[in-house]
Image (cartoon, rainbow, N blue to C red):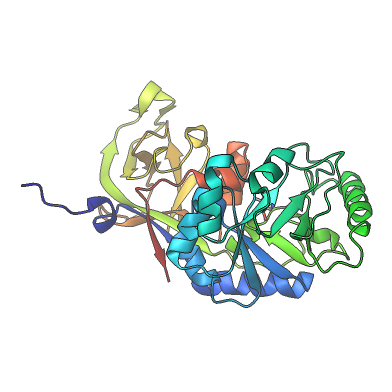
Length: 349
Ligand SMILES: *Cc1c(COP(=O)(O)O)cnc(C)c1O
């Protein structure tokens, strides 16, 4: 007989820790800065962090009156976790999804005339999305007026570009004026977009900033990093000078070196492009990654660090955020976070 234990979660070698207090602080800080209600964007398993864990923290906060996900399936998952608040489905609705959408009380964002056809005459409130320059989802030329409309939205493509963003904001304002007299939710700004303090929106749609990760280099909010990530050291050994490390020998020791092997690789979310480019941390020691990151393991230079087999080595913490690693990898923190695999145990403290 096969014993049924979930050994990945009961015997984890890597751990993503979510700090509840930091999440709460960030939500309060976003509210302080914007003065608006928050639509918490928890698509794609809350950016890879863990939708159940994040939602359990956010669901009781008055500042968050709506959640947003990408798909109807993710909306169902949120309801099953126990979320009673409004759930926006950013990715619209396809014909075979209508029944589930209704059954779970999800609110679709209508971005295409085909989504509207799917809704037909059903008495379902929905939001309309306009494309003001994102060049992805949203109406460009059509104008939709319907008594079931509960909200109007658009999305900024380049929040770091003030001129282009202001053009988008102006376009959106002209659209909103045509709904004058109606009491609607109006939302445009994401984590980065809130710097524009758009005067006519009622809500902001926030993902990244909730985790305390900055969406822009100069970000006027004081966020608290909420995520840390660590993994176990599974081997320590001394190798001589001139010793090649890991696949393809991209690093060769210059001197006798104490190396450590950490149970964390690209399958866990540490992108291979970071090979030879970053350090992991143990207390005050910075331990450079040596050679290629492999699927399940990464080799580090322990130097004089007294870390021993079984110790926890830090990949992400306040002093080394996902944003910091993303910059080294030539990408954005979103992508690194979404790469954190299921093998990594999530804990909320
Ligand atoms: C993901 C997403 C957001 C949230 O963006 P952050 O930068 O994480 O705050 C907002 N709006 C839309 C349409 C999105 O897809």
